[in-house]
Amino acid sequence: MGLQLYSTLSRRLEELSSDTVRMYVCGPTVYDLIHIGNARPFIVFDALRRYLKSQGREVIYVQNITDVDDKIINRAREEGVPASEIAARYTEEYFRDLERLGVNRPTHSPKATEYVAKMVEFIEKLIEKGHAYVVDGDVYFSVASFPEYGKLSGKVLEELKAGARIAVDEKKRDPLDFALWKAAKPGEPKWPSPWGEGRPGWHTECVVMAMDLLGVPFDIHAGGSDLIFPHHENEIAQAEALTEKPFARIWLHNGMLTVRGEKMAKSLGNFAYARDVVERYGTEAVRYFYLTRAYRKPLDFSDAALSEAKRAVEGVYDFLWEAESLPEEGEIPEAFSVELSSLEDKFHARLSDDFDTAGAIGALQEIVGAAHRFRQAGGDPAGVRAAAALVRKLAEPLGLFQVERPRAEGLTEELIGLLIELRAELRKQKDFALADRIRARLAELGVELRDTPTGTTWTIKGGDG
RNA sequence: GGCGGCGUAGCCAAGUGGCAAGGCGAGGGACUGCAAAUCCCUUAUUCCCCGGUUCGAAUCCGGGCGCCGCCUCCA
View 1 (tube, rainbow, N blue to C red):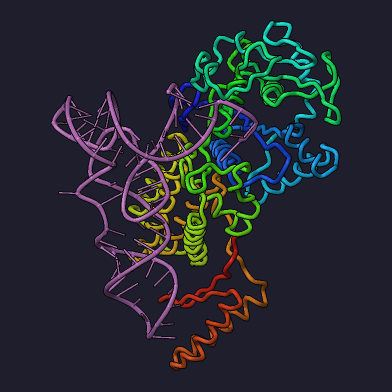
View 2 (cartoon, rainbow, N blue to C red):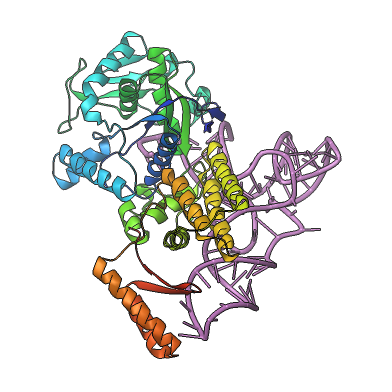
């Protein structure tokens, strides 16, 4: 099964054909809880990973944890605790949030602090090769030593230099040079190095970890579009300057989550913590919200959008749980099979085209609609069940629609059955007041009744977590 | 200013050369004792605007307008 992905580097679709896919996704800096915008790449690329697996490929998925950084140090100062404590706390919270978001754990979650020795080695080699230089215990990468600098972001060196927004640092030979190693200031976390005690710069960790765990070139490097420059540009410069081989083949970048059109960011104060959003709308509504928009486009966060996603998810579950309660009987007409399989093809075709999850979910919804019509037209339960099974199967890699219908305990279930039986009798006797009272009281208890031509069915509401 | 991207119904949104997916919402109808759910019909002769290419364009080309991201830490 082919899969074309739009690479930022080549600016066109590229075929991903490897049987073993090595992918690297930029992870969090653990100085605070992640906000819902941070969650976008985690959800989207997790879905991509699962889809690749469902195609029978092996996926090695690496996502770093930046546990040494200015923001962590600042936070530690504010709280008067060691930076390592802040990092440990938010690393743990990050893993909890992944779970809440329904995101599978990466194959590897390397921490920057575990890679300091390897980063030092890496930086030494860059210095030897003439791509980096030492100034007062700091080490900088020399952008001028890598002629291809700018190829990812499409930036031209001369124009960057002309830009007034680049801070002038006396120590740098060139304002565009970036720090590979920072000399420790008093009270900061520090590690020994040939240039004195200090800590690694942010742009280096991803390179060293990816090279160590995946080797180069690896298949996919992904992250938010705000990382294209300078972060990913700098990664490419370091890695390729040293190895003289391509770093990553395909570069994927997700669009930003916005709020009323503006990027969601901690610094703008317009953010919501991921866990609070999940708490309010449920895991699947959040995933559905993200996956019904092309991952490369910006997406606007709002209560209305999340509520809509929640309703849409509930609609699909209504269908699934209802369908799965039908008896296993009857025939699946040829015409209906054909319709289902053409929608299945459409689903895969959409995903193969730059992982168009929104189009694919559209196909899923079409399956639901087709099944409703089939049933309405008097189709056998077997066909409806087949449609439900197909939805389950296709949605699995997206991390959607896998929740089983909530059931009550044995006795409770029988008691509900008894109430339904009594109510049916009341309805027959036209005692609708009492019949409606049973329905209303059950609804208050979270049991929703539905009268269908073939009898009354029930579901427990609020199943999605 | 440079680079990248976006502009499709009331709202969200897929589609990138051959009759405009899907979701949410709204209105009408069927079913029902009622309710819910479901089904049917209606809600874009048209895809920001203006030109061009083509038998044919939302889709390609040129020019506008508007919005966003990056150029500084940032998913």
